[in-house]
Length: 141
Image 1: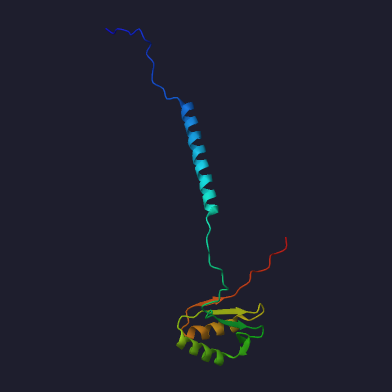
Image 2: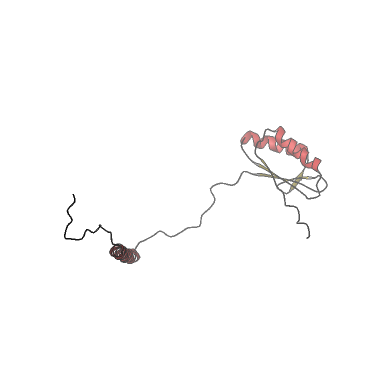
């Protein structure tokens, strides 16, 4: 048999409103503390060094080869033939075996002319070869 208590039995509850007030108080106090830190940061005086004009430490070691409309070959804007290109690339490869070659061609250049240049580059053992291409014009709608 159970004997009842003269006091009413209440379940324990967690009140949310005091917790919300507490969180707003903490937020406001952190905000005020961070604002006061910013003022301290602004008042600190520093003697920083002045900037100087920077100069490049290295020059890119890229070989630019262009193929013209009629199949002529240009090395850094100087016209050469395949034999001269072969000799130039052989000398450069002896000095540095890891230099890149950049091949570009006229839009009307023949595929065979560019292929001959690429064959000379690969015969020298050069591995880093890039091609300059331009996107095709958009078709009218």
